[in-house]
Length: 116
Image (cartoon, rainbow, N blue to C red; front, side, top):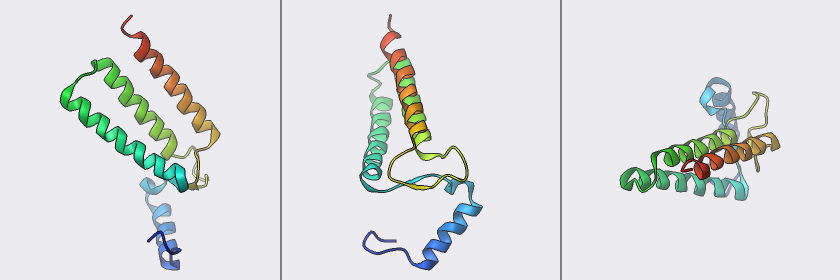
């Protein structure tokens, strides 16, 4: 499916069948600027993981905390809370934003205060 045209009825039906049968396809799909920013953030996370795995210039506890922080944030962004939730979105729901902020608070506190 290209960005220049709308999906054909066959493509729409195939996506519906996939979402009904495959549990992995129950992830959210983001459109617009947030979707592009999310793609850039995923690439940044992959580059971060590769860089610090190769060079190891960060303490193990901070690396694990940052890894878990990214992982939790992406989990809250991509996986819906309930099955009947709308899959196509432009932004995550407010309860997921609150959970992401709480994760940042918890792991940020750990990373800043662990050396003490």
